[in-house]
Length: 314
Length: 94
Image (tube, rainbow over all chains, first blue to last red; front, side):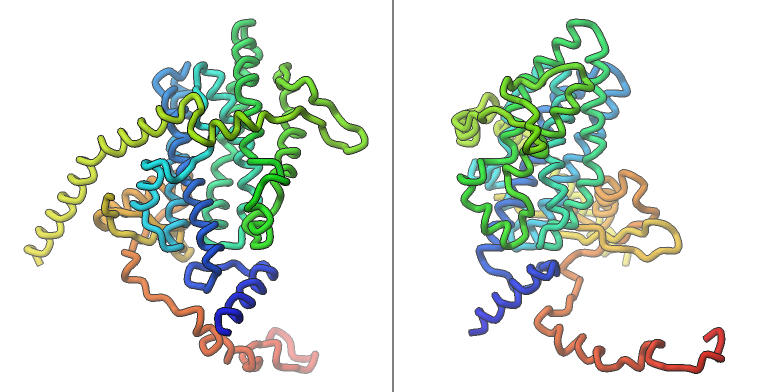
């Protein structure tokens, strides 16, 4: 009986746009869904540093290097905001990191593609961060308070990421023939994986309906994907280039762009661990964590020493 | 599995004259490291001029289940608000 009342009270709150806070009663499945989603989101920020970190030493100018470092630093911060939000639901940081390293937790598949040219750093900013923003803006109104607050902070910082990416591509597209080709090649490789970032089509997205009911999600995968396509189809014209989709065409009746079929086989393949860089990314992450073990131990020992010293002085 | 460092809550004063406001949390070995990390994580874009950190375990919070007894009694005390009192038009500046 009490459980029923709790559930009713919870749903009322969600319906009336009152945020759910960590100590409030919530259904187990709501908690589980959020832990899964927020931790995956956090892991994506952390793994997302790898394809870009790869280019910090090779950025073409000091300015670009400083910008890229700032962006990668932001992503570390975003990972931290999100891990903290997930921790309010009762999972520990160590447990989440363990889930990532053991392969039990997923991260965004987009980071399993390689960054082989400087233009890829531009394409990541424009397309990958662009798609992420499209997904994240509605999450600022997510029913779970700590997640929505983390997303507000993240979205504020993220828009510079997208703009700096477009800026890289714009400068290159105004350069030599070779530079322009480099941008087109990069867009060709990143376009389809980017629109896959919105997840499976609505009819095959099993968790979507419940998440919408709980106001964790506000718009369906296909709705957000369509908005993103419409936006990019316009923006690519500024670069004087094309999106790699022969079926991309303005539909006067729908007032939206029609676009081609997504290769869901590739999507599932990469999600299941067989993308070009899955193994490399995870191995790099685990190595970074293990190589950092002595730093964590030293910091703990140092703090202990300082505590002992101030205790003696007191 | 690794053991986590203690969790700290971070409060930031965005500019002098304003209250410190909860910004988020982070793990650190001690207060000094918590402040250094908070600086890196929460004030990269001039969001603050002062940082407080407190270990999360020292924060005591009210229980949402007590909301009724804690906050409802305020509802029937409308006389605590200035709009409760009807004064004649002639009374100025009050």
